[in-house]
Image (cartoon, rainbow, N blue to C red; front, side):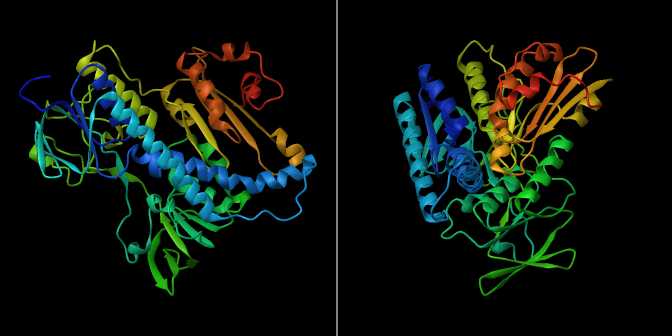
Length: 452
């Protein structure tokens, strides 16, 4: 450690990226501190990926109960759902994960500060009224839900509050067209809530493959979600604890809950970066170079706060690369191409590589292979779900440049496909691979004729 500083590295934010950076730096013998004002594990563990996936599981049971009848199962009474049980069991699991993060930090030798940290100058941080000097400061404060201001916006809640509701509403309006909106619309609908999904655009999940997005919209409607596209909320009025949600088309939707999932912004407000050379973007995110260094040579940033790819595994990978850059050989790199991702909407989406639209702009000539079929479970289960799969191929090289799936287990299947795409697999490699039968995944290696 440089004797002039209290710490070699001071990390602000104990989310996935910040904790990984702190632990890895400490394991290299550096004196490290990490400060967190809310909860260990950040958004993903506490109000994001983990509790959301638990809620998705809960919301899928009614369909499973229904499907079981075709396989010979019967129930003497209709299953009932207790929101408080789900909510509180979820909270217990998150608290267990918080303890694990606490242990990881303690065992690494890093010092953990419980409190809000602000940047005092390029080499010092203030926590709970005490100033600490650091050779390097790392900003890993993540993102925060954004709700626009409009008449009655104070009645809307964000995804943060969704995990702690006192009661499950009978009716709900979800506003937004991104992954958080479609996921919560599916969760609420699956739990028996009369759910409207309102979006100002004409296509949900607009950054994903258009055909896949259309399949998801159709599947959500089939399951009972009421889609209101090309629609904007003009005001929310509180009428005896029932909200009148008014739209630009002049109609009103009555709802017990209004959830705004209209994006997340970098969590940099009040962080003290005005005391440095750093100039934030208009959305509040922190500009960094290829080594995650800001305009201030002693301050670095990674994860959602730099607004590159807002995914937990990406933040963790960025942390590994940064620590190697600061304290290792400086050889590690991160490739933002072909990052697999999933949207746990219902039906589920898994994807890696280019959409059909992006591939058409990138390559001179492409071939598209598609397949749509009923899941085997539904043959006896009696449901209406469908699975859609798509491969996008660059005809010149025969490389598969996009792989997409809508339907059950999409995330699990696409993870394996992502390895093949990352390795540069060709369509001939897919064709030469023996499928696992009977499985939905085998369809990816049996699509022989291009659809277009």
